[in-house]
Length: 494
Image (cartoon, rainbow, N blue to C red; front, side, top):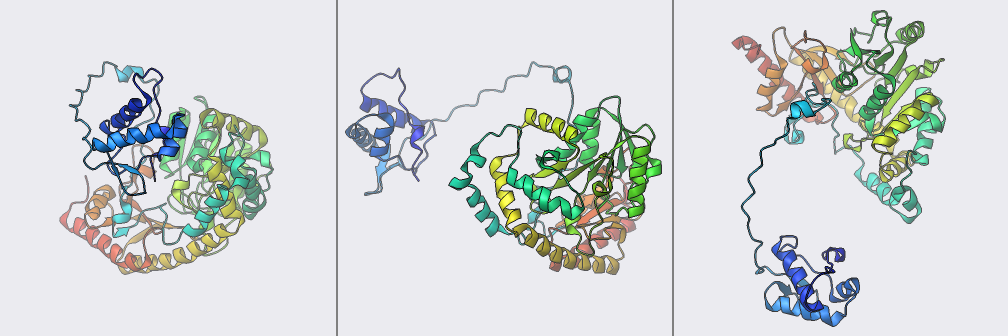
Protein backbone atom coordinates (compact mmCIF):
# COMPACT_ATOMS: atom_id res chain seq x y z
CA UNK A 1 0.00 0.00 0.00
CA UNK A 2 1.38 3.39 -1.02
CA UNK A 3 2.06 6.26 1.34
CA UNK A 4 -1.09 8.41 1.68
CA UNK A 5 -1.07 11.11 -0.97
CA UNK A 6 -2.25 13.58 1.70
CA UNK A 7 1.21 13.25 3.28
CA UNK A 8 2.66 15.30 0.41
CA UNK A 9 2.19 19.05 0.05
CA UNK A 10 4.11 21.97 -1.42
CA UNK A 11 4.91 24.81 0.92
CA UNK A 12 3.43 28.09 -0.40
CA UNK A 13 6.68 29.98 0.34
CA UNK A 14 8.98 27.40 -1.24
CA UNK A 15 11.54 28.60 -3.79
CA UNK A 16 12.64 27.00 -7.08
CA UNK A 17 10.85 25.11 -9.81
CA UNK A 18 7.97 22.75 -9.09
CA UNK A 19 10.22 19.85 -10.01
CA UNK A 20 12.86 20.85 -7.46
CA UNK A 21 10.22 21.52 -4.79
CA UNK A 22 8.84 17.97 -5.23
CA UNK A 23 12.35 16.51 -5.06
CA UNK A 24 13.11 18.46 -1.90
CA UNK A 25 9.78 17.50 -0.31
CA UNK A 26 10.39 13.75 -0.82
CA UNK A 27 14.09 13.92 0.15
CA UNK A 28 13.20 15.71 3.39
CA UNK A 29 10.59 13.06 4.14
CA UNK A 30 13.23 10.35 3.80
CA UNK A 31 15.92 12.23 5.73
CA UNK A 32 13.52 13.02 8.58
CA UNK A 33 12.57 9.36 8.92
CA UNK A 34 8.90 9.91 8.00
CA UNK A 35 9.30 7.77 4.84
CA UNK A 36 10.83 4.39 5.66
CA UNK A 37 12.92 2.07 3.49
CA UNK A 38 10.73 -0.03 1.21
CA UNK A 39 7.62 2.14 1.48
CA UNK A 40 5.83 2.79 -1.80
CA UNK A 41 5.27 6.32 -3.11
CA UNK A 42 2.01 7.44 -4.71
CA UNK A 43 1.79 6.96 -8.46
CA UNK A 44 2.87 9.90 -10.61
CA UNK A 45 -0.74 10.38 -11.73
CA UNK A 46 -2.14 10.51 -8.17
CA UNK A 47 0.58 12.80 -6.84
CA UNK A 48 0.27 15.14 -9.83
CA UNK A 49 -3.49 15.42 -9.35
CA UNK A 50 -3.06 15.98 -5.61
CA UNK A 51 -0.43 18.72 -6.06
CA UNK A 52 -2.21 20.26 -9.09
CA UNK A 53 0.90 19.95 -11.28
CA UNK A 54 1.55 18.13 -14.54
CA UNK A 55 2.33 14.44 -14.47
CA UNK A 56 5.59 14.99 -16.39
CA UNK A 57 6.80 17.30 -13.58
CA UNK A 58 6.33 14.54 -11.00
CA UNK A 59 7.87 11.95 -13.32
CA UNK A 60 11.01 14.06 -13.77
CA UNK A 61 11.29 14.61 -9.99
CA UNK A 62 10.98 10.85 -9.36
CA UNK A 63 13.60 10.16 -12.05
CA UNK A 64 16.08 12.55 -10.42
CA UNK A 65 15.52 10.95 -7.00
CA UNK A 66 15.97 7.53 -8.63
CA UNK A 67 19.31 8.65 -10.05
CA UNK A 68 20.43 9.90 -6.63
CA UNK A 69 19.45 6.57 -5.01
CA UNK A 70 16.71 8.08 -2.88
CA UNK A 71 14.17 5.95 -4.75
CA UNK A 72 14.14 2.59 -6.47
CA UNK A 73 11.84 1.30 -9.20
CA UNK A 74 10.27 -2.15 -9.32
CA UNK A 75 9.14 -2.78 -12.86
CA UNK A 76 5.59 -1.58 -13.37
CA UNK A 77 4.69 -1.63 -9.66
CA UNK A 78 5.94 1.89 -8.99
CA UNK A 79 8.53 3.79 -6.98
CA UNK A 80 9.78 2.89 -3.49
CA UNK A 81 12.10 4.41 -0.92
CA UNK A 82 15.48 2.90 -1.79
CA UNK A 83 17.35 0.59 0.56
CA UNK A 84 20.42 2.70 -0.25
CA UNK A 85 18.74 6.01 0.54
CA UNK A 86 20.65 8.26 2.94
CA UNK A 87 19.88 7.35 6.53
CA UNK A 88 18.13 9.93 8.69
CA UNK A 89 20.72 11.85 10.70
CA UNK A 90 21.08 10.92 14.34
CA UNK A 91 20.73 13.73 16.84
CA UNK A 92 22.03 13.90 20.36
CA UNK A 93 18.95 14.07 22.59
CA UNK A 94 18.41 17.42 24.20
CA UNK A 95 19.18 17.18 27.93
CA UNK A 96 15.95 17.01 29.89
CA UNK A 97 15.22 20.38 31.39
CA UNK A 98 14.69 20.56 35.12
CA UNK A 99 11.01 20.93 35.96
CA UNK A 100 10.59 24.29 37.67
CA UNK A 101 6.97 23.68 38.66
CA UNK A 102 6.23 22.66 42.23
CA UNK A 103 3.58 20.08 41.44
CA UNK A 104 2.85 19.39 45.11
CA UNK A 105 1.33 22.89 45.19
CA UNK A 106 0.12 23.12 41.59
CA UNK A 107 -2.10 20.01 41.69
CA UNK A 108 -5.43 21.05 43.15
CA UNK A 109 -7.01 17.59 43.49
CA UNK A 110 -5.31 14.20 43.51
CA UNK A 111 -6.64 11.10 41.78
CA UNK A 112 -3.61 8.82 42.03
CA UNK A 113 -2.69 6.68 45.00
CA UNK A 114 -5.82 4.51 44.98
CA UNK A 115 -5.84 0.88 45.99
CA UNK A 116 -6.79 -0.61 42.61
CA UNK A 117 -4.20 -3.36 41.95
CA UNK A 118 -2.62 -3.81 38.55
CA UNK A 119 -2.71 -7.10 36.67
CA UNK A 120 0.21 -8.22 34.51
CA UNK A 121 -0.32 -7.06 30.94
CA UNK A 122 1.10 -10.39 29.77
CA UNK A 123 -1.25 -12.47 31.94
CA UNK A 124 -2.15 -14.71 28.99
CA UNK A 125 1.49 -15.84 28.76
CA UNK A 126 1.27 -17.49 32.20
CA UNK A 127 0.42 -21.18 32.28
CA UNK A 128 -2.04 -20.91 35.16
CA UNK A 129 -3.79 -17.51 34.95
CA UNK A 130 -6.42 -17.55 37.71
CA UNK A 131 -7.17 -13.90 36.89
CA UNK A 132 -10.63 -12.42 37.08
CA UNK A 133 -12.46 -10.46 34.41
CA UNK A 134 -10.40 -11.33 31.35
CA UNK A 135 -11.86 -12.76 28.16
CA UNK A 136 -11.01 -16.21 26.83
CA UNK A 137 -10.33 -15.79 23.12
CA UNK A 138 -11.21 -19.45 22.59
CA UNK A 139 -14.82 -18.70 23.60
CA UNK A 140 -15.41 -15.35 21.93
CA UNK A 141 -17.22 -15.26 18.58
CA UNK A 142 -14.61 -13.36 16.56
CA UNK A 143 -16.15 -14.11 13.18
CA UNK A 144 -19.61 -12.73 13.91
CA UNK A 145 -18.26 -9.72 15.81
CA UNK A 146 -16.16 -8.90 12.75
CA UNK A 147 -19.19 -9.25 10.47
CA UNK A 148 -21.23 -6.95 12.73
CA UNK A 149 -18.41 -4.39 12.73
CA UNK A 150 -18.29 -4.50 8.92
CA UNK A 151 -22.06 -4.13 8.75
CA UNK A 152 -21.82 -1.09 11.01
CA UNK A 153 -19.25 0.36 8.60
CA UNK A 154 -21.62 0.02 5.64
CA UNK A 155 -23.18 2.89 3.75
CA UNK A 156 -26.54 2.27 5.41
CA UNK A 157 -25.05 2.95 8.85
CA UNK A 158 -22.61 5.65 7.80
CA UNK A 159 -24.54 8.45 9.51
CA UNK A 160 -24.75 6.65 12.87
CA UNK A 161 -21.03 5.89 12.75
CA UNK A 162 -19.72 9.30 11.73
CA UNK A 163 -22.20 11.75 13.22
CA UNK A 164 -21.60 13.64 16.42
CA UNK A 165 -24.94 13.08 18.12
CA UNK A 166 -23.80 15.25 21.03
CA UNK A 167 -25.42 13.66 24.09
CA UNK A 168 -27.59 11.00 22.40
CA UNK A 169 -26.94 7.27 22.04
CA UNK A 170 -27.49 4.76 19.27
CA UNK A 171 -31.28 4.24 19.13
CA UNK A 172 -30.86 0.60 18.04
CA UNK A 173 -28.74 -0.22 21.09
CA UNK A 174 -31.11 1.63 23.42
CA UNK A 175 -34.07 -0.21 21.91
CA UNK A 176 -32.42 -3.61 22.42
CA UNK A 177 -31.58 -2.86 26.04
CA UNK A 178 -35.11 -1.61 26.72
CA UNK A 179 -36.94 -4.44 24.93
CA UNK A 180 -34.68 -7.44 25.55
CA UNK A 181 -31.96 -7.00 28.18
CA UNK A 182 -33.86 -5.20 30.94
CA UNK A 183 -37.06 -7.32 30.79
CA UNK A 184 -34.90 -10.36 31.55
CA UNK A 185 -34.07 -8.66 34.83
CA UNK A 186 -37.71 -7.74 35.43
CA UNK A 187 -37.07 -4.07 34.63
CA UNK A 188 -39.23 -1.80 32.50
CA UNK A 189 -37.65 1.43 31.27
CA UNK A 190 -38.32 4.06 28.61
CA UNK A 191 -35.48 5.19 26.28
CA UNK A 192 -35.12 8.46 28.18
CA UNK A 193 -34.37 6.45 31.33
CA UNK A 194 -31.35 4.67 29.78
CA UNK A 195 -27.84 6.06 29.26
CA UNK A 196 -24.94 4.26 27.54
CA UNK A 197 -21.64 4.51 29.41
CA UNK A 198 -18.01 3.53 28.88
CA UNK A 199 -18.40 0.43 31.03
CA UNK A 200 -19.78 -0.07 34.53
CA UNK A 201 -16.96 1.87 36.17
CA UNK A 202 -17.81 4.96 34.13
CA UNK A 203 -21.45 4.47 35.13
CA UNK A 204 -20.49 4.38 38.81
CA UNK A 205 -18.35 7.50 38.41
CA UNK A 206 -21.17 9.43 36.73
CA UNK A 207 -23.56 8.33 39.47
CA UNK A 208 -21.22 9.39 42.26
CA UNK A 209 -20.61 12.78 40.66
CA UNK A 210 -24.31 13.48 40.25
CA UNK A 211 -25.53 12.23 43.64
CA UNK A 212 -22.74 12.90 46.13
CA UNK A 213 -21.22 16.02 47.64
CA UNK A 214 -18.78 16.62 50.49
CA UNK A 215 -21.72 16.80 52.89
CA UNK A 216 -23.38 13.54 51.83
CA UNK A 217 -22.71 9.98 52.97
CA UNK A 218 -22.31 6.83 50.90
CA UNK A 219 -22.53 3.29 52.27
CA UNK A 220 -20.65 0.58 50.40
CA UNK A 221 -19.98 -3.07 50.95
CA UNK A 222 -16.83 -4.26 52.71
CA UNK A 223 -15.09 -5.96 51.06
CA UNK A 224 -16.07 -4.33 47.78
CA UNK A 225 -15.01 -3.48 44.25
CA UNK A 226 -11.87 -1.46 44.96
CA UNK A 227 -12.34 0.99 42.08
CA UNK A 228 -15.70 2.02 43.54
CA UNK A 229 -13.99 2.92 46.81
CA UNK A 230 -11.50 5.05 44.87
CA UNK A 231 -14.37 6.81 43.07
CA UNK A 232 -16.13 7.62 46.34
CA UNK A 233 -12.95 8.86 48.01
CA UNK A 234 -12.29 11.14 45.04
CA UNK A 235 -15.82 12.56 45.33
CA UNK A 236 -14.88 13.67 48.90
CA UNK A 237 -18.14 12.41 50.35
CA UNK A 238 -18.35 10.63 53.71
CA UNK A 239 -17.86 6.88 53.18
CA UNK A 240 -19.12 4.14 55.50
CA UNK A 241 -17.99 0.56 54.80
CA UNK A 242 -20.59 -2.04 55.79
CA UNK A 243 -19.13 -5.53 56.38
CA UNK A 244 -21.01 -8.12 54.32
CA UNK A 245 -22.06 -11.57 55.50
CA UNK A 246 -23.06 -14.71 53.63
CA UNK A 247 -26.15 -12.93 52.24
CA UNK A 248 -24.44 -9.71 51.19
CA UNK A 249 -24.98 -6.27 52.73
CA UNK A 250 -27.04 -6.34 55.99
CA UNK A 251 -29.60 -3.50 55.81
CA UNK A 252 -29.68 -2.89 59.56
CA UNK A 253 -25.97 -1.97 59.52
CA UNK A 254 -26.49 0.96 57.14
CA UNK A 255 -26.21 4.28 59.05
CA UNK A 256 -29.42 6.35 59.23
CA UNK A 257 -27.71 9.42 57.74
CA UNK A 258 -26.76 7.56 54.53
CA UNK A 259 -27.72 9.28 51.26
CA UNK A 260 -26.61 6.65 48.70
CA UNK A 261 -26.18 2.88 49.14
CA UNK A 262 -23.91 1.01 46.69
CA UNK A 263 -24.51 -2.73 46.45
CA UNK A 264 -23.91 -5.79 44.23
CA UNK A 265 -26.82 -8.09 45.16
CA UNK A 266 -26.60 -10.64 42.33
CA UNK A 267 -22.90 -11.50 42.79
CA UNK A 268 -21.35 -9.61 45.67
CA UNK A 269 -17.89 -8.41 44.73
CA UNK A 270 -15.64 -10.17 45.63
CA UNK A 271 -17.30 -12.77 47.92
CA UNK A 272 -19.86 -13.89 45.26
CA UNK A 273 -22.69 -13.88 47.84
CA UNK A 274 -26.18 -13.69 46.34
CA UNK A 275 -28.63 -11.57 48.30
CA UNK A 276 -31.85 -13.51 49.11
CA UNK A 277 -35.23 -12.05 48.21
CA UNK A 278 -36.13 -11.36 51.84
CA UNK A 279 -33.01 -9.26 52.32
CA UNK A 280 -33.55 -7.44 49.03
CA UNK A 281 -36.95 -6.34 50.26
CA UNK A 282 -35.48 -5.41 53.63
CA UNK A 283 -32.81 -3.32 51.89
CA UNK A 284 -35.49 -1.47 49.92
CA UNK A 285 -37.43 -0.88 53.14
CA UNK A 286 -34.30 0.43 54.87
CA UNK A 287 -33.58 2.81 51.98
CA UNK A 288 -37.18 4.06 52.11
CA UNK A 289 -37.05 4.57 55.87
CA UNK A 290 -33.88 6.68 55.75
CA UNK A 291 -34.77 8.28 52.37
CA UNK A 292 -31.64 6.94 50.66
CA UNK A 293 -31.00 6.01 47.04
CA UNK A 294 -29.61 2.60 46.03
CA UNK A 295 -27.08 2.04 43.24
CA UNK A 296 -27.34 -1.59 42.09
CA UNK A 297 -24.31 -2.92 40.20
CA UNK A 298 -25.80 -6.02 38.56
CA UNK A 299 -22.56 -7.47 37.26
CA UNK A 300 -22.26 -11.14 36.25
CA UNK A 301 -25.98 -11.88 36.22
CA UNK A 302 -25.39 -13.42 32.76
CA UNK A 303 -23.14 -16.12 34.28
CA UNK A 304 -25.97 -17.74 36.24
CA UNK A 305 -25.44 -21.19 34.75
CA UNK A 306 -26.40 -23.19 37.87
CA UNK A 307 -29.88 -21.74 38.30
CA UNK A 308 -31.87 -18.75 36.99
CA UNK A 309 -30.72 -15.40 38.41
CA UNK A 310 -32.74 -13.67 41.10
CA UNK A 311 -34.79 -10.65 39.98
CA UNK A 312 -32.86 -7.42 39.98
CA UNK A 313 -33.32 -5.12 42.95
CA UNK A 314 -34.50 -2.49 40.45
CA UNK A 315 -37.41 -4.77 39.46
CA UNK A 316 -38.71 -4.68 43.06
CA UNK A 317 -38.41 -0.91 43.36
CA UNK A 318 -41.77 0.86 43.57
CA UNK A 319 -40.35 4.27 44.54
CA UNK A 320 -37.87 4.96 41.75
CA UNK A 321 -35.01 5.08 44.27
CA UNK A 322 -32.89 2.32 42.67
CA UNK A 323 -30.34 3.23 39.98
CA UNK A 324 -29.30 0.22 37.93
CA UNK A 325 -25.81 -0.32 36.47
CA UNK A 326 -25.29 -2.91 33.73
CA UNK A 327 -22.37 -3.80 31.50
CA UNK A 328 -21.55 -5.75 28.35
CA UNK A 329 -17.81 -5.62 29.04
CA UNK A 330 -17.74 -8.70 31.28
CA UNK A 331 -19.89 -10.91 29.04
CA UNK A 332 -18.37 -9.78 25.71
CA UNK A 333 -14.80 -8.65 26.38
CA UNK A 334 -13.36 -6.15 28.91
CA UNK A 335 -11.76 -3.94 26.26
CA UNK A 336 -15.20 -3.13 24.85
CA UNK A 337 -15.90 -0.70 27.72
CA UNK A 338 -19.64 -0.55 27.09
CA UNK A 339 -22.19 -0.34 29.91
CA UNK A 340 -25.43 1.44 30.74
CA UNK A 341 -27.30 3.27 33.47
CA UNK A 342 -31.03 2.91 34.14
CA UNK A 343 -32.83 5.31 36.44
CA UNK A 344 -35.52 7.93 36.81
CA UNK A 345 -35.54 10.51 34.05
CA UNK A 346 -34.36 13.47 36.20
CA UNK A 347 -31.27 11.51 37.25
CA UNK A 348 -30.49 10.27 33.72
CA UNK A 349 -30.85 13.85 32.44
CA UNK A 350 -28.12 15.05 34.78
CA UNK A 351 -25.89 12.03 34.12
CA UNK A 352 -26.29 12.60 30.38
CA UNK A 353 -25.31 16.26 30.71
CA UNK A 354 -22.23 15.33 32.77
CA UNK A 355 -21.22 12.67 30.26
CA UNK A 356 -21.62 15.16 27.41
CA UNK A 357 -19.23 17.59 29.11
CA UNK A 358 -16.57 14.86 29.39
CA UNK A 359 -16.88 12.64 26.29
CA UNK A 360 -20.24 13.48 24.66
CA UNK A 361 -21.12 9.82 23.96
CA UNK A 362 -19.38 6.44 23.48
CA UNK A 363 -18.19 5.92 19.87
CA UNK A 364 -21.08 5.46 17.45
CA UNK A 365 -19.42 2.61 15.57
CA UNK A 366 -18.93 0.58 18.77
CA UNK A 367 -22.55 1.15 19.78
CA UNK A 368 -23.89 0.12 16.38
CA UNK A 369 -21.62 -2.96 16.20
CA UNK A 370 -22.79 -4.06 19.65
CA UNK A 371 -26.43 -3.49 18.71
CA UNK A 372 -26.08 -5.79 15.68
CA UNK A 373 -24.23 -8.44 17.71
CA UNK A 374 -27.00 -8.37 20.32
CA UNK A 375 -30.01 -8.16 18.01
CA UNK A 376 -28.82 -10.92 15.63
CA UNK A 377 -28.65 -13.41 18.50
CA UNK A 378 -24.87 -13.74 18.64
CA UNK A 379 -24.76 -12.42 22.20
CA UNK A 380 -27.20 -15.00 23.56
CA UNK A 381 -25.27 -17.78 21.82
CA UNK A 382 -22.03 -16.45 23.33
CA UNK A 383 -23.53 -16.34 26.84
CA UNK A 384 -24.72 -19.96 26.49
CA UNK A 385 -21.29 -21.07 25.28
CA UNK A 386 -19.58 -19.20 28.12
CA UNK A 387 -22.00 -20.67 30.64
CA UNK A 388 -21.22 -24.23 29.54
CA UNK A 389 -17.47 -23.58 29.67
CA UNK A 390 -17.63 -21.86 33.06
CA UNK A 391 -19.77 -24.67 34.44
CA UNK A 392 -17.14 -27.22 33.42
CA UNK A 393 -14.30 -25.12 34.84
CA UNK A 394 -16.16 -24.51 38.09
CA UNK A 395 -16.59 -28.28 38.58
CA UNK A 396 -12.85 -28.76 37.98
CA UNK A 397 -12.09 -25.96 40.45
CA UNK A 398 -14.32 -27.43 43.16
CA UNK A 399 -12.81 -30.88 42.74
CA UNK A 400 -9.22 -29.60 42.84
CA UNK A 401 -9.91 -27.26 45.78
CA UNK A 402 -11.27 -30.21 47.76
CA UNK A 403 -8.43 -32.49 46.65
CA UNK A 404 -5.71 -30.12 47.83
CA UNK A 405 -7.40 -28.90 50.99
CA UNK A 406 -7.84 -25.27 49.97
CA UNK A 407 -10.54 -23.21 51.71
CA UNK A 408 -13.41 -21.47 49.92
CA UNK A 409 -14.58 -18.29 51.63
CA UNK A 410 -17.34 -17.51 49.12
CA UNK A 411 -18.80 -18.84 45.89
CA UNK A 412 -21.75 -17.81 43.74
CA UNK A 413 -24.91 -19.79 44.34
CA UNK A 414 -26.05 -19.15 40.75
CA UNK A 415 -22.70 -19.43 38.97
CA UNK A 416 -20.17 -16.67 38.38
CA UNK A 417 -16.55 -16.81 37.25
CA UNK A 418 -14.49 -16.78 40.46
CA UNK A 419 -14.00 -18.19 43.96
CA UNK A 420 -13.29 -16.04 47.00
CA UNK A 421 -10.65 -17.93 48.96
CA UNK A 422 -9.14 -17.88 52.45
CA UNK A 423 -5.53 -18.89 53.11
CA UNK A 424 -4.44 -20.08 56.58
CA UNK A 425 -4.19 -17.38 59.24
CA UNK A 426 -0.94 -15.48 58.99
CA UNK A 427 -0.41 -16.06 55.28
CA UNK A 428 0.10 -12.77 53.42
CA UNK A 429 -1.43 -13.45 50.01
CA UNK A 430 0.52 -10.58 48.43
CA UNK A 431 3.73 -12.47 49.27
CA UNK A 432 2.05 -15.70 48.15
CA UNK A 433 1.11 -14.13 44.80
CA UNK A 434 4.66 -12.90 44.20
CA UNK A 435 6.10 -16.36 44.88
CA UNK A 436 3.52 -18.07 42.68
CA UNK A 437 4.20 -15.78 39.73
CA UNK A 438 7.65 -17.33 39.25
CA UNK A 439 5.87 -20.70 38.94
CA UNK A 440 3.55 -19.42 36.22
CA UNK A 441 0.55 -19.11 38.58
CA UNK A 442 -1.42 -15.88 38.85
CA UNK A 443 -3.82 -15.18 41.73
CA UNK A 444 -5.39 -11.96 42.98
CA UNK A 445 -4.53 -10.93 46.57
CA UNK A 446 -7.58 -9.79 48.52
CA UNK A 447 -6.27 -6.93 50.68
CA UNK A 448 -7.33 -4.18 48.27
CA UNK A 449 -10.99 -5.20 48.48
CA UNK A 450 -11.17 -4.22 52.17
CA UNK A 451 -11.47 -0.69 53.51
CA UNK A 452 -9.97 0.84 56.62
CA UNK A 453 -6.64 0.15 58.28
CA UNK A 454 -7.53 -3.37 59.46
CA UNK A 455 -7.32 -5.22 56.16
CA UNK A 456 -7.24 -9.04 56.37
CA UNK A 457 -4.10 -10.32 54.67
CA UNK A 458 -5.09 -13.92 53.99
CA UNK A 459 -7.89 -13.63 51.40
CA UNK A 460 -7.47 -14.01 47.66
CA UNK A 461 -9.59 -14.45 44.54
CA UNK A 462 -9.31 -17.19 41.92
CA UNK A 463 -10.92 -16.46 38.57
CA UNK A 464 -11.57 -19.23 36.08
CA UNK A 465 -12.81 -17.37 33.01
CA UNK A 466 -9.33 -17.25 31.45
CA UNK A 467 -7.84 -20.67 32.23
CA UNK A 468 -8.64 -23.88 30.39
CA UNK A 469 -10.20 -26.70 32.39
CA UNK A 470 -7.24 -28.98 31.62
CA UNK A 471 -4.81 -26.74 33.53
CA UNK A 472 -6.88 -26.04 36.64
CA UNK A 473 -5.86 -29.07 38.71
CA UNK A 474 -2.16 -28.65 38.08
CA UNK A 475 -2.31 -24.91 38.84
CA UNK A 476 -4.16 -25.39 42.13
CA UNK A 477 -1.73 -28.13 43.11
CA UNK A 478 1.13 -25.62 42.72
CA UNK A 479 -0.85 -23.10 44.79
CA UNK A 480 -1.47 -25.59 47.59
CA UNK A 481 2.18 -26.69 47.66
CA UNK A 482 3.35 -23.08 47.92
CA UNK A 483 0.97 -22.36 50.82
CA UNK A 484 2.26 -25.48 52.59
CA UNK A 485 5.88 -24.45 51.96
CA UNK A 486 5.29 -20.94 53.33
CA UNK A 487 3.56 -22.32 56.40
CA UNK A 488 6.29 -24.89 57.10
CA UNK A 489 9.08 -22.32 56.66
CA UNK A 490 7.30 -19.79 58.85
CA UNK A 491 7.45 -17.29 55.97
CA UNK A 492 3.90 -16.17 56.36
CA UNK A 493 3.93 -12.43 56.83
CA UNK A 494 5.57 -9.32 55.45
